[in-house]
Length: 239
Image (cartoon, rainbow, N blue to C red; front, side):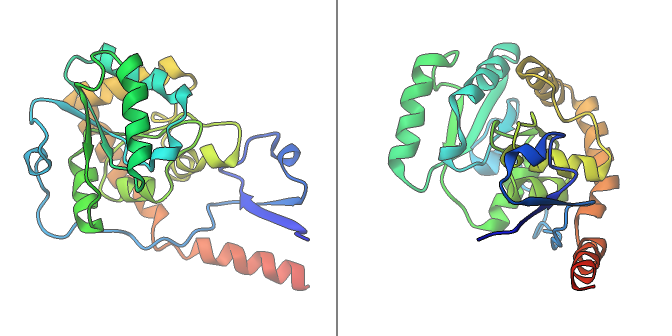
């Protein structure tokens, strides 16, 4: 029997207590001590990954089962609003998952799969390079990224998110809260598309956002406060 569910106040919605049968304990920060990932070698170009330098790379490097049909609206909206948009994804661990997504998107996305590109799985140093050369990272609602969002912020890449109702869709939002960045979380699907396309197609806005991330992302990494908050909690319980 589980008595407590420990989470983050930055990630949970106002009605979070209704989502748990356990007693919910909300840490004031993320409570995750994360070593900062770093690029090895100089930053790669889009051409290294077979991408066109004049295209806008909207990267969503999530496992295939996170792509809920609700997220298709955002992908379609981005492709419609930005004629230079290219959606970049990673092959699923199970080939059938990738094929199922391709069949679905052939039917519903503008131009079908013509501007959707799947890259093969890659080692982490190469993966970080992909995140660094992406114009925008797309968080797939109603789920979200976890490690990939930490890694993207570590290399200064914007991640657009639409916070969901539950914890599983609010981790990127919590990271943004921790950094004090309010411009990357959307309030609706149309707002998500707007933010993504502005960052993907406007170099000046993109660079300004990257600068803000670079200046504030340090709080996410190697932060002793994310250890001390656990110490305080356990000391309180032990008495």
